Length: 302
Image (cartoon, rainbow, N blue to C red; front, side):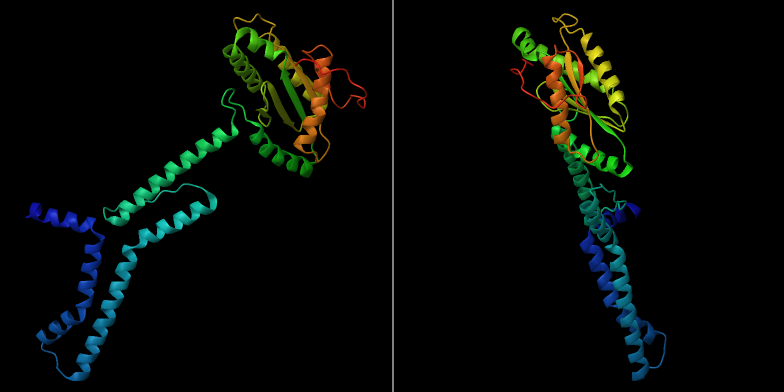
């Protein structure tokens, strides 16, 4: 008997249409059922009691129908709220309804689709803001992050410094040893920078062989110490077929004034980087100590 009933019950669980039809059919016939029971029980057949019975049974059937349908589509309302919330805050959601009917199927499909879409969006966001070779941020990412750090520095009246790093004679490495070697140099430089970052520091590759490091709550002398450590670490890299010491970098550092933009900070640190290149490369120069630029010689070969 149980085996015979299992098929219809499974079909009933999986069919929202059948559930709604069954609920409506039963509720519509509640007045008739009540009338039959009333007569079978031998109660009076006077008009007023019968009208009262039919009215009460109709109201009861309507209430039961509405309450049952409300409960039946409750997961659909939860799904709608979850989708609206996802549109507002972008957080993926989980629907706990695991019914076998169309609502359960829809809930599972929407949940899976949102989860997949959220993962794809995060991957695209990562690709859009990350340098694929070094794994550091790119210029777009740096601009977004620095805006928050500048606002925080203004509120807290905190110092902020920037390090601009450019690998020396990188074009000669590419031309003489090939772009594969040049890529390995960039990857190694990115690893060195990453190892020397503190928790709140921001590092990005903003050009071919140029890196930028933002140092929140850091004064110029501390930025110089960090830049010197980076310079020393790069100078001892061993990347065959290059000899140790073939990879060096020049650094321009600058302590920003309150409220300066990233472009202003990069402009000042670039002036210091220019002086480091012109002064022989493989050195650190402070932008804050440079005198007003006068006539310059021809730009050095980077």
